[in-house]
Image 1: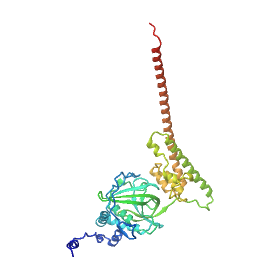
Image 2 (image 1 turned 45 degrees about the vertical axis):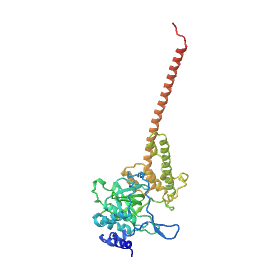
Image 3 (image 1 turned 90 degrees about the vertical axis):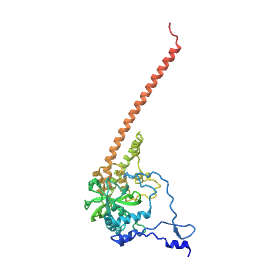
Image 4 (image 1 turned 180 degrees about the vertical axis):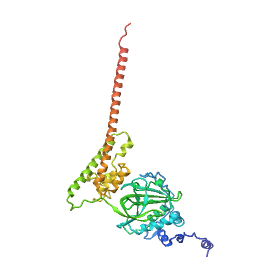
Length: 404
């Protein structure tokens, strides 16, 4: 054996972190052992080979989100360090160990089941369906829980695991609760929003976990099944009531819903038209129709033809009502009413008043700016006339003979 080989055999190997340190060693090892290094397929052969080291992306500003979180820092992801940190939190902190136990019930309830077990996150501001929820997490309980949700195995075709955000009108404000505790349990029947995980990013330098998710539905609490270190509840999905074909008043209800949708759509178009006439660019941009409102429009010709995933016909009107409600600056009480109702028409009627108020405001601003512009134009014309008269007098004085 060569000396180089002897030195290679004599070199100590780095030992992998042991899962026996967990309180529930089998559960912990099952959760965290499922991670696999990324692999890629070589086009010149049929075998899988280890992926080459990634090229660091260029540093650029991260896009902002509706929650005020500007995005995770770049070039700080180390999968090995992230796994080590999560395992340490789950085995050496009370919050982490409790989170691993609490989240296991959520992972046992596969996506798509009738009854969902959701970890409930207390969010400080009202959210709506189609909104983005971005979280910046540092408490051990949430770091462990969301890492487990992001890396849990799923059956083919299953969507990513979800979590719930409670409605701020039904829970105490965040500043009234000490960090790491949720002392007030959600009441049975309380409502909230279901968030689907889109991206989870470990920042090992700052020791934070960044989560990006999208609100995809609503839930109603049926039963609280865990209360430490966060609440876990069995929930039922909440949808708007469909208009049944055998309903005696089906045609009347359909006409009422259609009339409410067209009224809201007309107000949106008027808002956009008035916004174009205003000099304030920020105010004008906020009045423009967004993509979600257009793709859920009650008028088929107004929907983008390139939409690869259009809303389902049975949910289009519901999603249209949320696309409008999320931009109307509802109060917490109004937002809770919109969340609790299962009538699309009632939600649309709730936002009509807000839209009409906005149209009146924009019309007043446009009228004031128009009057100010007319005054400026008239003043300019008067000034030009006076100037022309003065120039004419000067010219006549220069050409006419003076008396001596």
